[in-house]
Amino acid sequence: MDNSNRLMFAVVMVIAYMAMGAQTQNSTTAPNVTMAANVTTTGPNITTNLSTTRSPGVNITINGTMAPNTTMSPPAVVPVVNTTVTALTVNISRTECGNSQLCAAQPKNCDPALPGSCFFVSTQQSSGQTFSFQLRGVSSGYIAVGLSTNLTLDGNATIYVCANNNNNVKFFTALLDKGNLTINNALPVDSVKGSVNGQIIQCTFSATVPKATATRSIDTSFYLSISNGTFMNGILGDPNIVMLSNIAVDLSNSKTTVINSLNSNTTPSHAFGLQHTLSQALLILLGVVGLMML
Image (cartoon, rainbow, N blue to C red):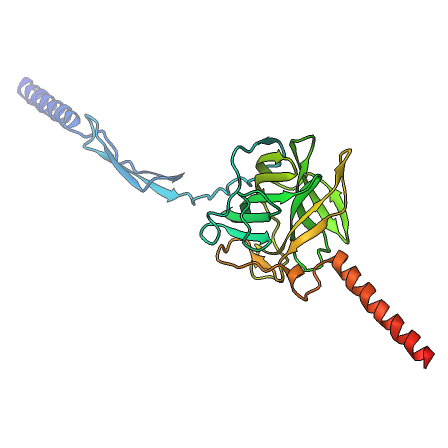
């Protein structure tokens, strides 16, 4: 190869080398990138765009799955049992009878705010099974209001007792079954207030009453009673019933008129039932004696 041919070959090689260098500099180094991940999140699907100096942008899509909502049940409310008694500084009255309060009394319609032998109870619904009670009566021992699901006061009737303890009110909760009064002080009560003036005992309190039997359509429907009895050395005597409704009354219905079954021909309770039974037995005995004398 002569010198002219060598020169020509060298020029061609230089041009080819320069062309290859230019092509390398103009190339794009960013590859296509797809990033996808299944992520559980509480938000919606998110699409974002990332750009670099060497790449016009990389789209990244996150497929979001909404977590289900979880409903937390509220904590159960435990009824308060507090039999502490504070001073009652006002007289109980029947001002709200028939309006916001259901009332029962013996004698009928007597005024508890006045002196005299008036036995009175009122109920006012606070919420659900919770009621405020006002109780007034005459006794040297105790007065009580009772709730029962039957007219004979059997089957653990609920009894709330306000006793004269050295001219101060002592409060009890108890159960009555077949004439037996058993103190348990476990029934849910609160906000007890009381006063004693001679033989007049007054008390107010809040109570969560038990639900009536499953056979009743109204859970707040009870036979309502007022009683009194002796209280000596911390022991409650048997109750003497002075008022007992002739039907189960809804404690939440302030319009209800409560009729005392003791003033009617209805046999009211175990004590009066026993009296009635003895009378019948006496009549039968007299009849037999009469026949024998014929």
